[in-house]
Length: 160
Image 1 (cartoon, helix red, strand yellow):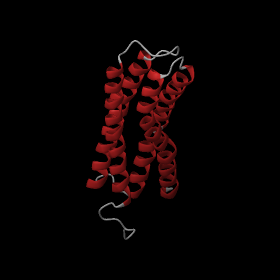
Image 2 (cartoon, one colour):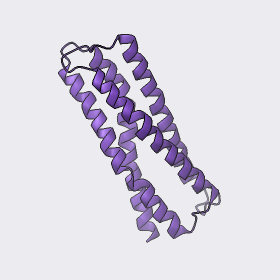
Image 3 (cartoon, one colour):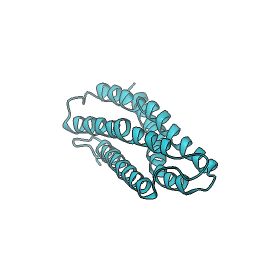
C-alpha cells in the first residue's frame, strides 16, 4: 500500500503543483501584455485562462498532502523532523498561493479590459506584475525546498 500511496503522491505533485508553478510564473508577463495590447481580447482571454488554471490546479493540489500523509503514515515517519518541516513549508506555499497569489491575480484581472489598455496606469500594472512575480518566486522556492527534502531526507534508506 505504501508504494501505491507514494506513487499517487508523486503523480499528484507532478500533475497539480507543476502546472501551478509554471502558469503562475507566466501570469505577470501575460498581465503586462494584456494591459498594453490594443484591442487585446486574445491577451485578456489568455490572462483569464492562466488565472483559471491556477485556481483549478490549486484545488487539485489538495491531493498532494492527502497522499503525502497517507504515505508518511504507512512508512511510520509522521513524527520525523524533515517531514514536519516539509509539512510547514507546504502549508506556507499553500498560504502564499491561496491568500496572496490567487487574489492578486483576480484583482489584476479586474483591472485589465478585454477591449484594450485598462484604466490602471502602466506603472501600477508593472508594480502589480512585479509583486506577483515575487510572490510566485517565493511559492516556487518553497515547493523546490519541499521537493529536495522529500528526495534527500535525513535518515533515508535509499542511500542518497
